Length: 465
Ligand code: ATP
Ligand code: MG
Ligand code: MG
Ligand code: MG
Image (tube, rainbow, N blue to C red):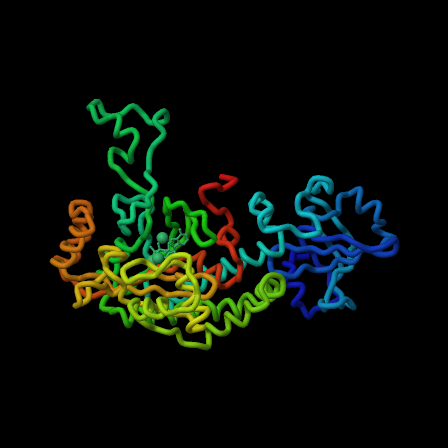
């Protein structure tokens, strides 16, 4: 008999046949006549019910064998119609084998349910909970939908480096790469040996804060590209929206301007949310019931409605006359805080918002300067519950303007000579953006803390490594 996944069986129309299923016990309950064992194998949100007749499987035997919450088991039996609520089939067990017991006294995942804070301390076990099973399946679906969207729209996936010499954001939030001195083989005889040992083969390098600059290289040859990889920021990320290690999706398109860039961002986000609604229905239904009754409505709203677009300058005017008291004052020229962004989205427009044309001094050197010489063609996409989910811009394609901006922002030309050559040889208008994958996950799952949408969160006080 071929092994089936729980989801295959739950959807099966072929009853009265022998089946084999392998998974983990979620619950066992019953009486002296019959025992019910719920088995989940991760193939979907729902577990399958196994019915064990007490004549063949007395409760004492099940207990002694370790058929308890958390145990890994194999069940052989007959797939039959179920009388139970919320399920159409169940398995009448003929054989139950335990691969690995889970000691009922010490197993941390008890039936009563646990706080998200507690589960963060046991990152190695929390994927077995309903919540994290749902989150991880949705995370997979979203990653898949990212590749699907770009593939369907003629983009190429490029792999940009993790170890890099350049600070793409110029924000000084980089982790330095070093080697363990002891484990290095004996090195060059010359005096630089000490540095050589501690750095990346003699060069100072960092973990990437963004794949954008290298994605621009690829866009200047392949036209439409994207990168989707791990990103690192040495910021004191003790907020519910920042991690020290996160994943970023960065499309970059030759011959696109800011308008095209906004259209792409909107269409892309809508595709991802629509994909979640159609492919993750069981998991989303659970999260909606368990944590956030407005989740499904909010997701559908994004699919059905255009985003509001306005300039940073217009947004500052709105914020200055807002009745709400903000913790940080708003003034033209300062970066918006999450509280301001959320006010615009949740209170004022009640819609996702795209803000454009930010002051040049608060944005990175590579953004295209506007004719006013004060603002740049930047765009931030702001979402309810989150604030900034995307940051992007049209890029400066003029060599002269770019070098002037770099000098103003104290970015060294020598480090980015290759980037400047893109403007020297066949420069072209182009634009792109970065979508924080975990920010997207926060929106789609309705979870409140970014540490709960990535399997192994890295932040200043992470418990496990
Ligand atoms: P924020 O203002 O929230 O700190 P940012 O403007 O510094 O974000 P960008 O450099 O514009 O971020 O990066 C592009 C996107 O990457 C952001 O819009 C956000 O979705 C995501 N992002 C940035 N920093 C982090 C982080 N520390 N953890 C998770 N996601 C992040
Ligand atoms: Mg930041
Ligand atoms: Mg920002
Ligand atoms: Mg940004």
